[in-house]
Each structure stands twice: as structure tokens, then as C-alpha cells.
Length: 356
Image (cartoon, rainbow, N blue to C red; front, top):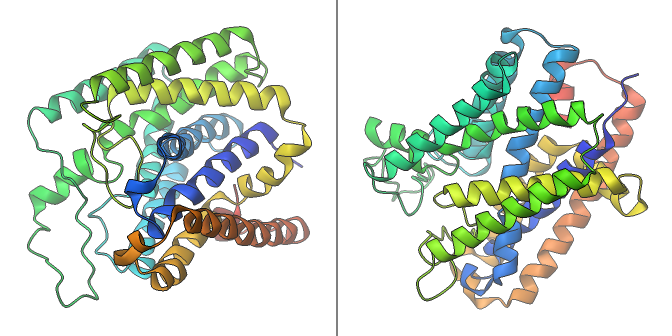
């Protein structure tokens, strides 16, 4: 039986725990009421998810799946799942907003194609992606909010779904556009390379120092470069989400890179601590949790609290709903983990949707 990397399960669990709060609190209470620390914390869930997707492709392509077709199929399944989440849960026209699952799906074959290349080639790829991202800022205006077209609404505006706007959303101003997010799974493959050389343990002073330097430099640059009267007020706030990556900037990219290194180092040092054990349950059921929490937010939280009236509720109500969502998600995830241990299915679809 293959030994799971407990650190990866924990880090994936951390990302899910953060994601649940980032994606539900704003549907209960106004984003303007969220404390800055919460917006900063919320900003780390998506980068961790995307980075880990590239990390796992790099590890698994060497161990067992050494074919482009496998990652084209798996990436296509992820993109199809993203479209189904848009249609079935959010009632949105798919391939217009490009949420996080789209970029994860696109990144899988990209990472595979680059995996046998040198670190220099991968670093150059990331540099080119960031350079194009910066260039696009001078060409296109960043959309304040992605083109979410509810096809169940009688007021749905389909006129905005032009070929140009769809391409622009994919490349530049959707939720997670190719530029710069396609660089993150490639960065994950670089993580995999160096962590493997370190015997799967980043708990060393060199990693910690680099992580601290990048975190401080990145977020100091982000603060002083994107602040007028209030912290980070030059960035776009896409209510109900308060993350600091709309648009994703180079300083945010550096800061998030540093935070990811620190999280890897801390988890690798303390991975057998009892405090992490609940998060491993989340980490073994990541895609299941993403779909589950989306359905809960869309079908329970939004109707109960009324998204348009969310400003009527205090922040304490948002924390309460967050806590309840964590409890429900954990219990259902634990049931899935127990079933997986007993069933030990080799079915592709079962493992795809209920695996880590």
C-alpha cells in the first residue's frame, strides 16, 4: 500500500480550512466588515491549492503516471467538474468566470510537459508568465467583477459574453486567469524537486529564512505599492471575497511563495502533532470538500441569509456560520475517509472525486 505524505494532507487541509471561511463569511456579512487579518489569511487558500496540484503532478508523474494522455484526461475532468459546478450549483454560464478548478485542470498537462525540463526552464516559464501578466495591465482594463451570468434569471445579460470578453477573462481578469496563475502549479513542481532532494522535509533554517524574506518583502511591497488611504485599497475588492489577489500582482506572488515555504517548513517539523490530525481528514477529501462547500453556500447559506441583504448581519454571525460549515464538512469528510478505507476502490471516478 502506498504511504501517503502526511505533510501534504495537512497542508491541503489547511488550505481547505481557510477556503471554507474565505468563501462563506462574505455571504453572511458585508465584505467591508471583514478584518484585514482575515482578508490576508483568506488569500492563501487558492495559492496553496493550485501549488499543491502542480506538486502532486510532479511527484506522481515520476512514480506512476508517466504519460501526457493521463494528465490531459485528468485535467479535462477537472475542467468539466468546474463547468458542472458553475452550471449545477451556481446556475452560471460556464467557461466565463474561470474559477480555481479551471486553472488546476489547465495546469496538470502544463506541469507534466515541463517536468523533465531543468529548474532553469521552469523558472524561465514562470518569469515569462509574470512578464506577460504585467504587460497585459497596460493593454486591458481589469474587470471589477467576473462575468457571472445567471441563466435562470429573467434579467440575465448575455450580451457581455462576447468572444473577446471570454478570452480576456481566461487570460487576464476571470477569477483565476492563466496570467499569472498558470505559473503557480509550475512553482509547485519546483517545490517538489527541492523537497525531494531534502528527503521530503523542508524543516530547515534555509527554507525558513527564504520564506520569511519573501513573505516580508512581498507583502511590504504590496502594502506600500498598493495603498492610498487604507491598506491595499488600490486593489479590487470583489465582494463577497476579500482576498488580496484581484488582480494578482508580483508582490503578492512573492509573498504567497514565502508563506507557502513557511507552511511547508512548519508542517514538516510538526507533522506528527495531534493538532494536525483533523486537517488530514480534509486533506484526503479536497475536491469533495470544494464541491460540498459550494453546494452548501449556494443552496443553504445564500437563501437563508440573502446575499443582497448580507450587510444586515454582524460579523459574529459570519464566524458562527463558518464554524458550522467546518463541523459539517469535517463530519462528512470523515465518513468519506472511513468508506475509502473499507472499500479501497480502484474506480477512476470514485478516486477522482473522493480522493485527495
